[in-house]
Image 1 (cartoon, rainbow, N blue to C red):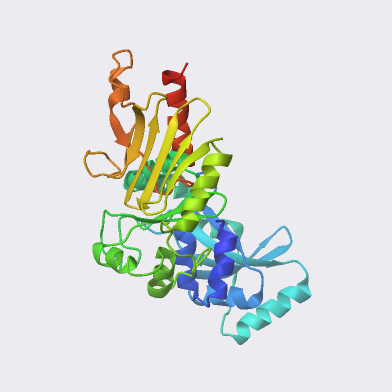
Image 2: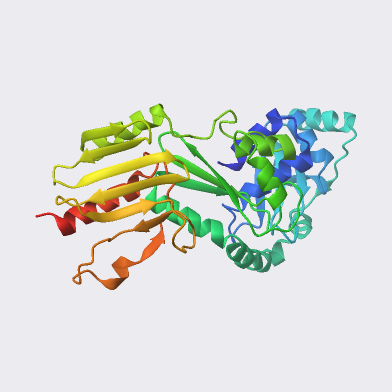
Length: 360
């Protein structure tokens, strides 16, 4: 999601300037660079500009190349190294006059500022130092989500991730916390959104139908994306989608479908068998067997191994063959959801591994 899209959603939700800026800074860090000492965000109409100016730290008019910029500046702070500049621009003097008159009517009086004073107002000369300190701190604090995202990008249909950065504080109440909460939105591909919530608000969020609605209710953040989306549960519809995935994505022949435990057994042309059991999101297993019926690889949700992102874990090699390198015997985090169509990448990887090593 780009800042422009977030801005449009915020205005539709009738948020004030301070709330909007908080939403913007939560995602703007994903595109911040050391070369640009500010986050410039163009405003489309006078009414929206007025909203941003009412809560701004600084307001002024900057003339650059014959173009008038009406700026509402939200200053950088210890949590975000760059000032945010919400601006409207006009070139025709009649347009400038109308906009200035509208703002004055709403008790907003602007003074002109030079390029030099503008640079000083956002402390551009010290930005690179602030950015470097912020980036190091952000990487350390966001490491857990970054590693989770990397795993999901590799093993599942997730293609993008958004981190709502709050620097180890709860997004709702600002209490210090080290825990993260995530939600994933899926259509053709997946988008994972991560944030930090304290224990109390993390528990409260589980009582809502999805995490996005919880934020909309408690924080003033608009219901991004699909606010009415429900948490995916295993049911007959999910079973049908899994069956279609096995036929279309893995070229399997379906052998058995158990509707009580939502389990499908399918066969590859190589002779390998795929068993996908999806009893619940926290109770599932994906098993690959060689043509003789021996287990080769497995992912399951049993809490019987210590892994960094568990309990879901991967056994890439269940064989006791001495010819296989020892590190292949290890158990590792699978980063899976327990919903096979979303976990397609790692399932394919297990099938490829089995067929390369255990078929002739």
